[in-house]
Image (cartoon, rainbow, N blue to C red; front, side, top):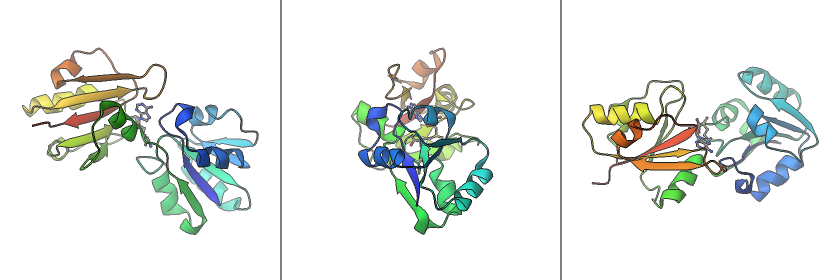
Amino acid sequence: MINIIGLGPGNENYITKLGEKLILDSDVLIGGKRNLESINDFKGEKIEMASNLKEILEYINLNSDKQISVIASGDPLIYGIGRYLSKNIDNEKLNIVSGISSLQYIFSKIYVDMNELYITSSHGKVPDFDYILSHKKVCMVTDSKIGPKEISKEIINRKLERTVVVGENLSYDNEKITIGTPEDILNIDKFDMSVVVILDEK
Ligand SMILES: C[S@@+](CC[C@H](N)C(=O)[O-])C[C@H]1O[C@@H](n2cnc3c(N)ncnc32)[C@H](O)[C@@H]1O
């Protein structure tokens, strides 16, 4: 069985008990550098995953006798490796263990429900902001090119009134949550790794 395990937003206290148990029982752990480094007690083999997805897939298929766990930040099926692996590995051999997404985490911190939420990402694409901003409640995972400031500019360009929430380094000691108008966000110098919530509270 191949496990795909969500680690939660970062702080180790947010991983599920099942996820933790499966990881420790595994022969091989596959994941991004930062995620692998976060698992200290694991004694088996660690394989780093970056842009080598084809090789990783080949390795998994050739080693189906081993207990392999692929670890992912947050929830593996929210802009994570879960999509690629579930499309390319026989689903009968897959066990996906949900994690708490950074998206869920930020909503718990701002006391707002996630009902009718539109989830999207700016990773490696030019987002369609007309479509995105037609929703009343949006949460975006962002990359270094299109982050809180670029999103705020798009709101200002359309003369829309929105509240913007930026959650940086969520669940870590240096977590920071900023709530303001798009103009407030533009006045901030820079942001670390973050998710952005856009609320139309009218
Ligand atoms: C490839 S996506 C993975 C999302 C992940 N699967 C999840 O459910 O949270 C990576 C992006 O998620 C967001 N992210 C993940 N963990 C975060 C955290 N602890 N604090 C802030 N943003 C985070 C950032 O926008 C980051 O660029």
